[in-house]
Each structure stands twice: as C-alpha cells, then as structure tokens.
Amino acid sequence: MGCGGEDTDVTVMTPTIQCGMCQKTIEMGLSKLEGVGRSTVDLASKTTKVSFDSKKTDLLKIENAISSLGYQANAVSANLEAYESLPACCKIGGMEKM
Image (cartoon, rainbow, N blue to C red; front, side, top):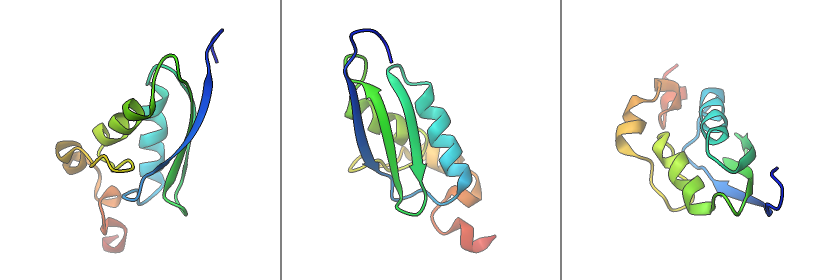
C-alpha cells in the first residue's frame, strides 16, 4: 500500500451474502474505499477478509461501506434501502427462488 501506512488485516462477518453477485458487489464496493488494498469474500464461510491502511480507514468505515451496499457487516445491519435494491439472488432466501 502507501508509504508509511500501517497494513491491517481483518475478517468481517457478512452473514447475509448469498451468491457470486454479492461477492462481486462487496469486493468492488470496498475497492473504492480509500485505504482498502484488497478484499476477498468467502461465500462458504460468509466472511470478508479485508487488508487496509489503518492510517486511511478503519474497521467501522469498512463495516459501514458494506452496510451501504445492502449487506450486514459484523453487528452493523444492512442499509434497508440498499438491501431492497439488490437483485433477487442477493436477498436472503433469493437463491432458493431461482
């Protein structure tokens, strides 16, 4: 990452992710957050691993960014308006309807 930054790795519980579209949405959304170097969504464990520069961002900003995309992040609930805008496959129970 940047010069003088402190790289930090965290695992965020993302229990509401459902499919590959969720994975892509979160990874692309986090890539736009200043200070985030890399994010990897694991559908099987419903977690998101994030590497970031702790001088530019922090865990709460990452959780809020995931929430703003429509997904729960640790104890931060999904933004309801964003959740309602997600494709059907990304909503809880949506994969069973397909």
